[in-house]
Length: 124
Image (cartoon, rainbow, N blue to C red; front, top):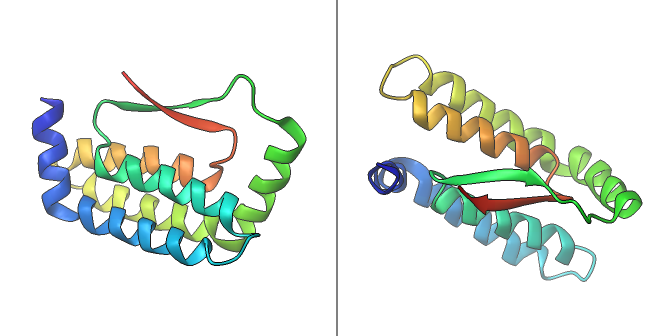
């Protein structure tokens, strides 16, 4: 069932969203300062490619102060807008019964798009 959900997800917007994340990560890698943020957009882009069967968890050995500082910068530079976009799409998809699993995936992506540092994606 996960494979079918991922294929439907890719056909109806998942691939386009992942491409946007990967293009933005390439743009962020132009500067040295943007490389840590680019790595996080690659992580979110990979989640956009295959979200069903994945889970976002907090890292046990994350670098506390640095992770918090990077999340603070990320939050104000673009994380809030990306997360609001995912929440908006999630709410729109929750209107229909068929869209509920896809809305759940958008809420999962909103969580990681808001505070990506110190989080990792694992398979269920």
